[in-house]
Length: 151
Image (cartoon, rainbow, N blue to C red):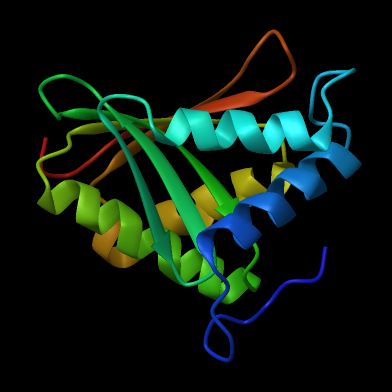
């Protein structure tokens, strides 16, 4: 997938999701038999679920499922931005979560580059007092648990 520097050109939300889902399909991260169109439609449907927010920062789309009390978020990110911009957008996103009163965040992912992203974020000086643990799931995917400093 060709990444697009959001500082030069900002893509629309649907384009970002389509590119990211296409990349996941090409990488074999979608279940067998799931077409690209079906996967994109499922993301669209997921974004309209109750207690769900879809937010674009740069060329990254964050899909967040909030608990009833708003203190927990399960999130996924769909990225079509450069690595540096993806990092900056992710930091901005988690800081916004904290400002909203979110105390805990989880994210499931398969790409080892996302693990590197989480580890880079965890090393940021302003985020040092957050807690983070990443576990490998039985499926081979990983799950990150993050406790925000406001908790």
